[in-house]
Length: 344
Ligand code: 3MF
Ligand code: MG
Ligand code: MG
Image 1 (spheres, protein in one colour):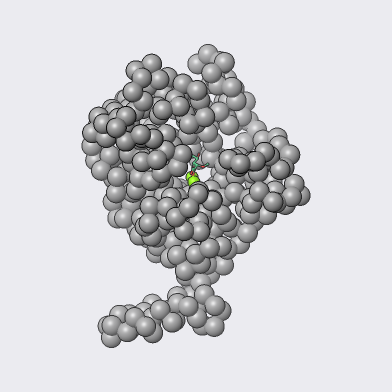
Image 2 (cartoon, rainbow, N blue to C red):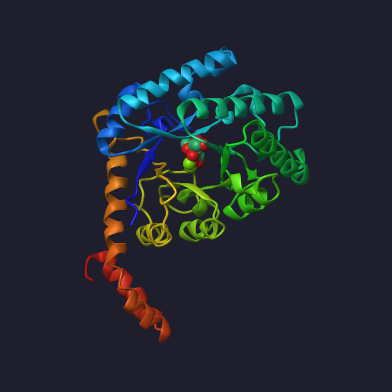
């Protein structure tokens, strides 16, 4: 059985600012984060293009590659791999109304420049995966953009990435809203449809984030299962979320323990990780967390995942089979609750 390997992004250890207030914690240098990630047992780091190469707009293509090579040395020092690179288009002034589906041709061109640079960085860091979290790809004003045109622009942009590099894999992280009001690619179903419409569906898949599925009113484990059935779950962003409100990125399992159990269960039952996939955590510390506890939410998430993995290993499939045969879902449900409560 494959042992799960974990990954995390530098943004998961952050200063605590939110939309309504300033930072509450000190900035931690990236190398210090790497050191701590390795100590906590992470195997890989996920990057935004400008985490890897800060102030990316100021450099030439060659300089960007050179800076990525420097970063690779730092990762090697801590025995960490790079899992993916994601163009952080939502932070840039060029792409305030979206990148690949911006109504401005100039902005779309800039978005492609960032996508190509992300591919270059990925190559230097030794990973073949680009993640597209399509933060501003949709509408704030519904009449501002045609959803038909916007969807086609996304497919065209992905095709260009696939053509730019014959090995690169493009992994879409769907989210139904926030910061955009109505996104174009909101769920795993959308991702699968986009994938099928590209020139190489085998290289286009998805990254399921638990909180994003919850924001769409869907069950994260079913979203994971759907993508796995299509052979297109490239990575996951496990976390948690208290209902349909602002994006919380809570520690894995702290709000919806049974749903978290079922995410671990579906991953484990279907051999997730056997092709080198990482269990990615996309969790944030609370704003009130003190500097000295900057990594506690990561530790908690790892511990909860591992405890749930142990529950999955103990899951009584014979009992489950009997319950299903008798259509006794009351008994099955109580068994699961007892297992989670430590009573079974
Ligand atoms: C937003 C997210 C992001 C993306 C990350 C990679 C901050 O809801 O989940 O995490 O996962 O930026 O593209
Ligand atoms: Mg998120
Ligand atoms: Mg995420």
